[in-house]
Amino acid sequence: MSSYVDCTKFGRDIFFLSGCTSFNTEKNITKVQPNQNAAASENSMMHHLQTFEEIAEQNGGNRAVGTAGGLASAQYILEQAKKAGLHAQMLPFENREKTVGQNIVIEIEGQSKDTAVIVGAHYDSVKMGPGINDNASGVAVLLALLQDYAKQKVKPKHTLYLAFWDSEEVGIAGSQAFVKSLSEKQLQGIQAYINVDMVGTKNPNIMIADGDHSSIAEMAAQFKANGLAQSDYQPILDSMSQLPKHPQDAALEERMRQYFKTNNIQIKDDVTTLTASDTLPFLGKVPVTSLILFNEQMKGDELEFAPCYHKACDTIDGVDVNSLNLALNVIQHLLSDLNK
Picture 1 (cartoon, one colour):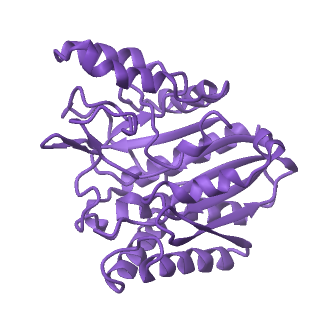
Picture 2 (picture 1 turned 30 degrees about the horizontal axis):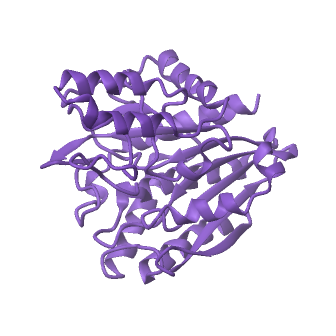
């Protein structure tokens, strides 16, 4: 996840999530039970996290873009693709700091080469820590999907691309470079972009990226209830209302919402608008959704998305395997639904 929210600033560049207006410590979720039928076991995902933590420990405590830890993380992903018998494409780019990053894109051929679904997760960490929840957790889920699809004998309806983004923590640069490289025809063929970021959070609030911008009205009500002057919060609402959206965003949101309803899993009522991750460059260009598992903590005037966010203590000890299983199950369901 690219940045925390500083509630003392209301400028145009702020990254919006559930807002700075309230902090709910009550968890509006039920305990997630592991899916015993998942093709990739929880042990496999936890093994991936352990490996990424070891990579950080051996390389200065982080896996940031352009560092030895970042390059070793990329190599590990490539090795997993090779073991699964899948070809991985390396796509280099340069971020705003002139550091060269490497996106890794793995294609799982579908019945159609003209339509595609992309599932993405950034694999870089900040320089302050190993980035196990943020975002080795998302990478572990993608690697589980990789192992699952590599075993399937029937091609999916749409070609599936598993995208491992670099330099999300520095300017969301990897996914932006990828989107800029796509033609209009390629963009039109993308049925969905599904973002996977910070999905190992313990005791999370379960939220879905806001596909129809309905959270803007709720955020306005929260600001007002907390006694903020309209002149203070209106610039935030105006900026949010101007965020681009795709006509099919709301349909993706509803598909995900139906999964939770069918499985009797409670989600946080106020869905959110997410621009602080690799969803950003896709917004308005293709249908976008994201499962959000946060345990928000106020640190002074700053809102952290989860304990140890962007810190050296973001280790495997802070990851809940139940959250990983939930994320894997939801995305598997969504992919199955999109391929009907």
